[in-house]
Length: 428
Image (cartoon, rainbow, N blue to C red; front, side, top):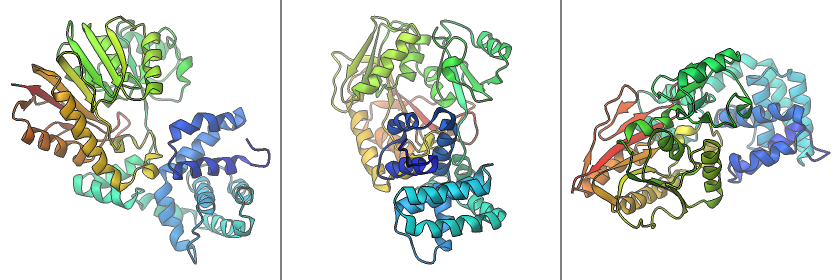
């Protein structure tokens, strides 16, 4: 950390990088390393918490300013200060003095008085301010409009839920240990955890833990994977002895799950991001799934061609990732309304390219971690209209909401993020 910068100033700098389009997952590790170990948990909480409440804090501060600040650094200082006062147990006087100092440290001493005045007002009107924050939908307006159109009945609950953090779910590697056996090991270690409702390999942790310190991590007994993402392996046909493509495979959760459950003759894990494919290799190694049946290929799924047609394709398509905002709150700032049409076009291209590589009688499982119908139900409506040789295999399940095609899971509880699945069979 820069010697002249306090923790709040460091938080502000990180949030400014996100506003300039940097994804948190790419910068967080490096930023955390610049913070004293004792301050890392607080740093993490202030960055993620401020992002979760970002658009609510924006809606709250606009009427408090006599004229717009037009200054991202000072606005960010304000949001970080208000977040501390309204959403944490940090003593208000500490929150104010540290944030006012941060405003000076990021280069705007002349505006530190504005920050001071608004934060002081927040300490006098805390419950009124909290009420405004709670009422705010907390999303960029373009996204709120889309969700309201797609999910009119659920939109209010959705907006509130998306402000919360995600639970951590494990997927037990059942080649190594049964779920119930691992669950009792956790309980034996006084770690609160419960079996997931829909995934037969899933365990939901009920308390914060250091993942690498959990029993069996280095032995490959489990991975971290959202419960709704774990449903993939229950939707594919039996893959024993079959050839499979996992398109857009990194960081490898689904690849690993398929190998834990089946013994395919060949599994091709495809991704265009070589660095993220390293993670696939590391995960497979830790889980002892590194077999000669797995080919890891760096290539673009919209143009790559297999040597021969395959039995099954799992296409976890690139998407807006609106379904995982709880886990990645920076998506609220990073995603723009214009991204959606581009993403939909890319999905179409990859679907088209992959579909040609499927055997007749084979299955393509289309997946996104989005909750926007344009990327999900509507994408499938278009696909079936253009492909008379495609037939939907209805997913009969207790989870999610049946769509015209496929099923949609919404991130409405701690059990899982927003995911969409549609199962397609090639009939000619």
